[in-house]
Image (cartoon, rainbow, N blue to C red; front, top):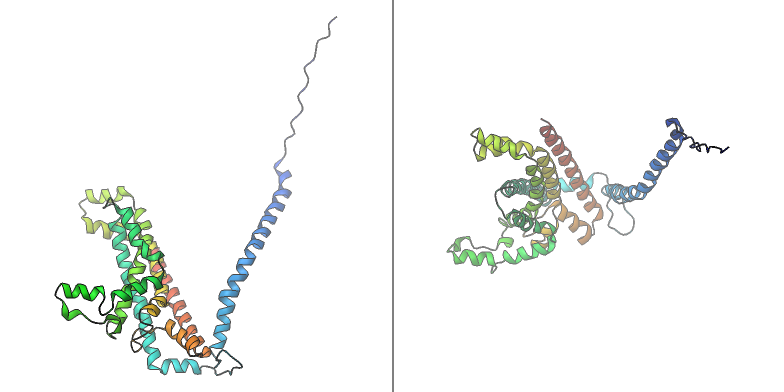
Length: 316
């Protein structure tokens, strides 16, 4: 009799219950969190040492008469009394605010116009965006020296003015106390406009084409579509661009150092250039630290106020 071969039974598949993975997942998540903290710890320590500790030490020396060498004496608020009673420092404070707000307003206006104009109107918008953004990546010192050559008495700007018959406008732009600050402002706006344009371009690109077409079908003109459709979509971009523009404008230094050095007759001096002059040229590190602390406080106040104003508007 032939024995029939019984089928080999398949091994039972053991199903793992969800609770079996809980201890392993808990351990892995704990290790990952611990790993994240350990990886971030060197960066946190560097940021704390470079920014906060250094700022705290500088803030301490602002209340002393330290010259950079030897001992120092605690003098309290005497450095700040010197700042607010010195007409030259008050002029530097005024110039700082003029350059900050002037560069922020003009750069943002030009950036909005370029972002809207180069969004869908021109076929060569990609090339033009690159050209307008190039000044941002160039060295401020290098470009400022080029502009210094342009603004010279025998430079290209005056040559063009003479060529078109505007001899009355020819002047030593950087040596004239009336026009030197505005020449610096022009250079700063020229270099910062591309950065604002990039920020606004991302906001303009987020506006759906269908919304603009619907507004055009309803009879809205170009300016009505820009005012009612495009600009409301740019509120988050406006918050970012204005805050960054104001903070960068308050600490303008490279362009002034290359163009005028703070002159003529302190007509273009700012708090940043006065910090450099007092601390590194004259050796008054305590007085320079007081100027730096004042500039830091101004930047902090305006940055927080700007964020609150623009953040509230962006959520409206």
